[in-house]
Image: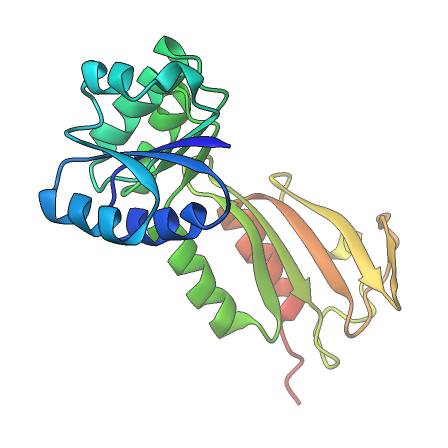
Length: 222
């Protein structure tokens, strides 16, 4: 695969080193001279020193032949413009962008990114999952869309045990996708009753999914 990488910093360098060993044809645009030298010493890649928004560099790099582009700089404005150049000027089929700030994710998608990854959001998700892993786990989250998918595990002494789905009184902005029980799954009706160790898939707006998960994992105090 022919891959163009914009930015060879803290995230870009390890990715370049990994992809270099996989038979890919790498092209890198990086403005820092030290980073360029490090790439030359460690990876098999064509290196162009400059900014990721310089069209002439893109042309010299043969961007019209690229299969995938990764915008990995620390500057969201540069990454957004790189996505626009990749998709709209060179028709690169697959574009991935790094977002330093979550609020810029939508702008990058509108600019042409097929996938946007925000490391700070992913780090937050991992830490919360580690903290709450006994009873719930965030499977997917789109911060800019206020959307979340969570799987909540009903404790053996959970306060909702024996209650129906209707009695949970979940918000219209949150849905139960399915309930995993005894190595099978069900699509619960309003009369479906909860049992201990049920794994409940919740989908919807983040705040309402969080509230529903709190109900599901709440423990009956004795």
